[in-house]
Amino acid sequence: MSSRPDWLARYGAGDHHGVWRELGRLGDRVREPAYAGEAQEVCDEWARRVRINLDRIIQRLADQGYRFQVNDDTQTPVVPWTPPSSSAEEHVRWLEATFGPVPMTVSSWVRVVGDVWLVGTHPRWPDASAADPFVLEIEGTRCPGDDMRAYLVGEREAWEEYSDGEPFQLPVSPDALHKDNVSGGPPYGIVLPDSGAVGRIVAAEEMSFVDYVRLALDLGGFPGCTNQDREGPVISSLRARLLPL
Image (tube, rainbow, N blue to C red; front, side, top):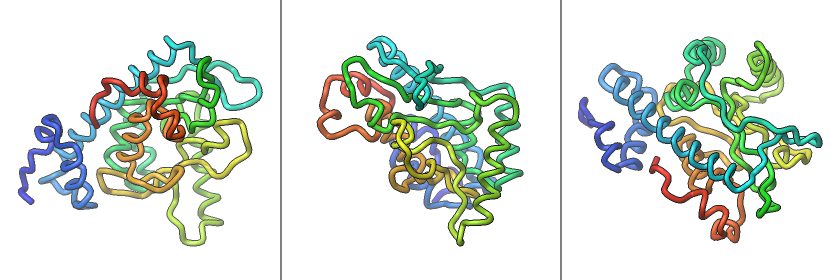
């Protein structure tokens, strides 16, 4: 591989899968000076596109009468997206100081995208809350003060006591059952530490972080929707004309 891979130009020209494959194959080497700058630029451009797509999906849901709410009996309304705070960069540094290196995509997400919560109810789609609506909260802007950091540290301490050799997963979302207000399993989590670019997440199944976000947005923000729902008018309207990732 050339020391000047031109990833950003290729990504912008549509070679998304090829660029991500090459970044993934580099593993930890992506942090080397020959690669790190452009690799982070690709991740930032990816995050910018994710943010645009989320804005479109959220606006379409709102126009359709979707009600964004917490995942409990109160069904309290919530704001579905909060932008990165002024402390986003510092939060990335805190994550790395506390849990080790985080993937470049995760750094980009915190700094560019923000926190997302699409749990809710749709007036024309009664199964929306059971379709694993997309949630990804890394900075924890909905949590007061340092509550998010205290929660993450507590999860790390529990992992240290009970992990039995499995890698730590930074919790970023309730699982599909909890989103539907049903007692379920552990939260979805990003595998840390990870010095690569692409990242790994354990959600309904383990996959690359990039693939998971692509899956979620390709299905209009509902990665757990049924095959029938995927062809229905709601999902079709939500996924239309999104930017490729």
